[in-house]
Image 1 (cartoon, rainbow over the protein chains, first blue to last red):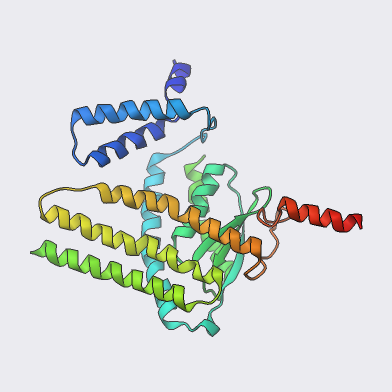
Image 2 (cartoon, rainbow over the protein chains, first blue to last red; image 1 turned 90 degrees about the vertical axis):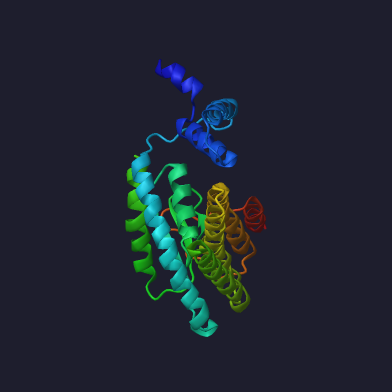
Length: 166
Length: 125
């Protein structure tokens, strides 16, 4: 039963996501559209599963939702801070810095999420991963305390991502 | 009526952030610091403009959710393009040299096959 389920739905969350995207694209909700979206959501992951055989082991949707709300809020706050830096700090006084974040996350999906979050919150851009994937290189626009910035990212985002992908 | 004001307010905030982003792009002089400006425009600037579009269509009585999709795709693609630009900067060494990683030997961009070949050729001499 579970093997048949896995064969039919190799990526269950992708199925759900594709169905929701299809309904949003239609711009109006009807039962027929929902069914067609579900059919697409089953056919597309099934047809493309050869190219991505691995699925993340565990994924908690509820924690993911609260994580996205936190990230949204941080994006708004950080946008205002960075806009202030752009308008008031002259180039000569700007203190850009590289920070190195040692990663506890091991799954590629989780590291991608962390790197994406770091880039989306203004003021930090994730630039590179070390050759074996144990550290992340992040560029900070303006900081007086690079170590504090690193600890902030680790405790605020990485700890939560570890709970989501566990 | 209130919808019109909300739309106008969102448009103003959004375009204000886009303007600040462009100013940042013009003002900074290092490729890596410049990269910070477009990531800002991509998130809140475009987000507020799309919110204005949504509110406008709601006040006209036509619900529209396409903007949510645009936002979603933007959030997925913006970090990837920023990462590519950062990798090009690192590879061409137009920026400050990054510190070495704590756990591994080097950064994956700096460890290119041709650099390895160059080092081997230097050792062979």
